[in-house]
Length: 107
Image (cartoon, rainbow, N blue to C red; front, side):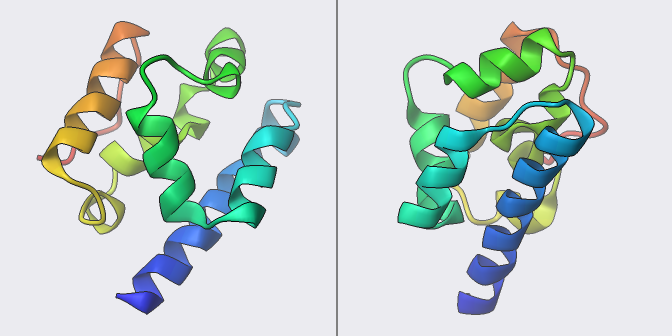
């Protein structure tokens, strides 16, 4: 499990990098959350928040919800296994509410 958590940390740093490079969005608060805790804690905090983060909204406005924690978690069996069914449903609902078209949903 520790290896998967470390790999998830890397995946979270990768979406930070991609948001900066591809969407010209420097997700500084997200980066601080990652460095202060870890990828899993950061993702759970964001998914369980009652409202989308400012970063989520910024990526929505840029048409890049694919670079959100919610998309990464709901589109990958590898990562969705780290979350509860309730967290996956919250992430999916948020994406649906913002008209995101997933590549595929993890069941």
